[in-house]
Length: 120
Image 1 (cartoon, one colour):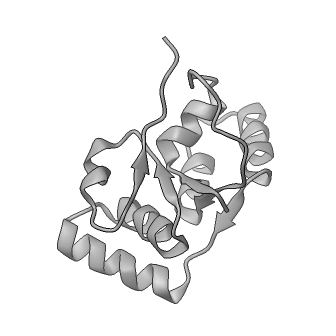
Image 2 (spheres, one colour; image 1 turned 30 degrees about the vertical axis):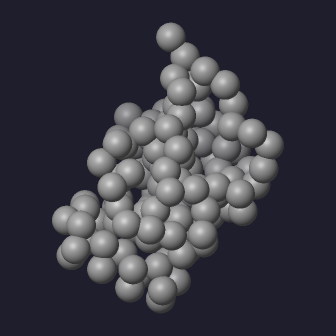
């Protein structure tokens, strides 16, 4: 896996809102991002199909014991929301960059973040 996509960047990709596509590579999402994308309350059947097709192209990173332990540590020490702590822990454990536009995550120790440029 090349990099991990945060939920906000996944939504931008799905909505065609990125200024340029990410470089070629194998991208992943945390199981939390998968769940957030599919649990959107107003998701139509057509949109759900599009989300599922998008997710099928990605590596879905499950919650391993080490990701769970690191997420707990990040939640306690960095005061992150639990979903953010899980996404950050996933990127750290896999040793990949996190594509996110959540600027507060850039301060997480051991995490490397990349902003996605939005189209105007």
